[in-house]
Image 1 (tube, rainbow, N blue to C red):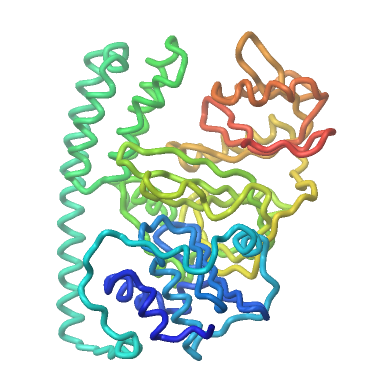
Image 2 (image 1 turned 60 degrees about the horizontal axis):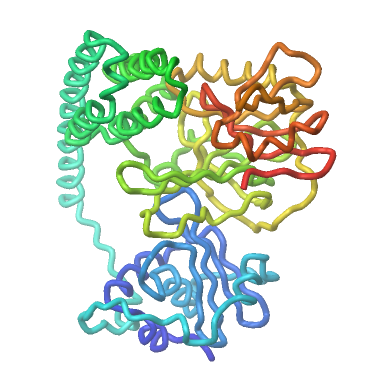
Length: 465
């Protein structure tokens, strides 16, 4: 079967999907496009998150698969990939199918089984052939009006955020006057009220930090919760003061402050920013973490390490909790990619600008030659640049897992000067590692607990699963 516009039109579940697919017909949104000799076509499409969606189609029977959480089948990404395959303007690199494509081929259902009824009664679809060309009009006056409107909206938001920060100051004073013991007991309700006010003030990043504050406190042993509360409220005050004085901050720290408050940088703006840091090479996926946020979105963190270096990157995705919890990658996967980093005093968060392929790799990971104590000093260095940083990846060699009561600790194997407590949620999972004399590992430290992600041991690889 040869793909055609008529066939794609027949597959589309509704006109909205057709319109959405047409917006994806841009090479810049597809860092990877490839095809093999037997009719398999695949690509990676950049969505709203950091990790591209993986899409594969079969030209022989028009079957498809996409990692996006859409409830429509085929989704806009699958339709767009089919559409581009019929358009000579797009180039598909000849290649052997990667492992994730082979896995889909081995598990997929029979042709035609993937179609579904969304329960909608869509309006008649417009012929795709009538939408393949679009007329771009450049109206200088319209562009000027749009730019003026954007500037007014920016100024209005700035004023709204500053008013919200004034209310946050009063709220912080009230909590301190009542005492930290009282605050911890009532933190869920107290934080919810001010978080909602900050959402109204268009400071969603700060609101999210407040929404999750209570959960962070109650994850700690009861005796240290008041002290932790003081640290958390102090960081909120520091962020608010930094935002008010952002004009005198360095460009990188100013970017950190604005992103913490909730200002976003679009993918297009980041990719076209000449000052943005770019790193190309072979990256290894060392950890994938997922949690449900109070706003009912699932936050998915994919941690990458540039092989042979101490450089890490964080790909961040947000998906509805009803959608798939997968990141698009698997732990251990080796990715040849070019990453562009968001501006920061300690650049970690990144986007995949382009990728030339990936594969699951079983060879040992080359972990940098530093002790646990030396790795911890790197974390302290990060705090001097970004005092409200939440997490930091730390690689280290020659460590031991030791148990004290019900708690597990990572300690330097050759000394006792440094010990980091393992996250209580991982205590049973890492307990078997206590029988080993040493491990070389990577963990994510949040200031109080270490989440062990990857370990090279005398018995082989251990990963957090």
